[in-house]
Length: 221
Ligand code: HEM
Ligand code: HEM
Image: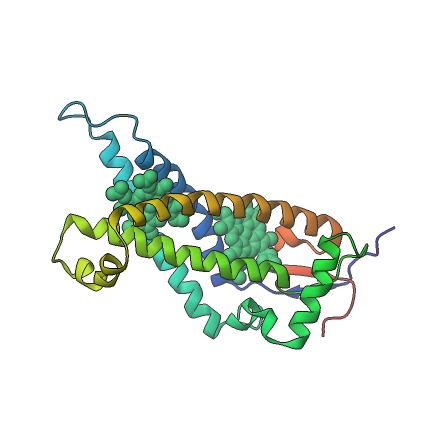
């Protein structure tokens, strides 16, 4: 019989939850519209058919929302509580963090039966999030570099000059396209892990990303 968690603690502050759900919404829109940009269902057969143009417009609007949300979360990692801090995303830098990672890895590898109780982020999850953040940066840079080509010589084009020096347009397009599928792979694993931890830890994992609160059996340190 699992023990009933006794302690309730506020973990995810409002900016963390807002940026999470704004990212989910914008990535969903970017992925669906991006899919159609990559495989257009028509090429604007008549002057009145602007449907692909609208799809591109929605993609670019969601892209701006996504950038603002990601940037807000980066700023909050310098201002928020300890669970939101940038330090959480580098657990491998401290010996305590490394110990927590090994414990969690042992559980994932079926070497440990009991799931380690985590309060803030799961240290294995934050390692995946830092890779995800790298993907966000790649998608934003390649996306805006491709987008800015509509106005060569403009401010955005000039600011992203280093991208055109380093990569070809087709290379950026390929990386941008592949990014969609890597992010899709992350989402499958992420939602599975969230459900798994919710069931195994009895800590209200999934509801925590809506309410901000998690539950715990042992007294918080
Ligand atoms: C998670 C975020 C994103 C996803 C999943 C995504 C997905 C995609 C996909 C799959 C394509 C089609 C690529 C191809 O096969 O040619 C595409 C095209 C495009 N995306 Fe994104 N995108 C994201 C973010 C962005 C951002 C932040 C921008 C910035 C404005 C952007 C701008 C563009 C542009 C300009 C194209 C058209 C490229 C071309 O000219 O062929 N995307 N996107
Ligand atoms: C586009 C889809 C998604 C992406 C890219 C994503 C990404 C992330 C990221 C980066 C975090 C860390 C939050 C932070 O510190 O800022 C996070 C946390 C979390 N997400 Fe998602 N998420 C997605 C969808 C979902 C969905 C659909 C659920 C619910 C089933 C969910 C449940 C959670 C939970 C419970 C946490 C907090 C747990 C923890 O990180 O230890 N996510 N997610």
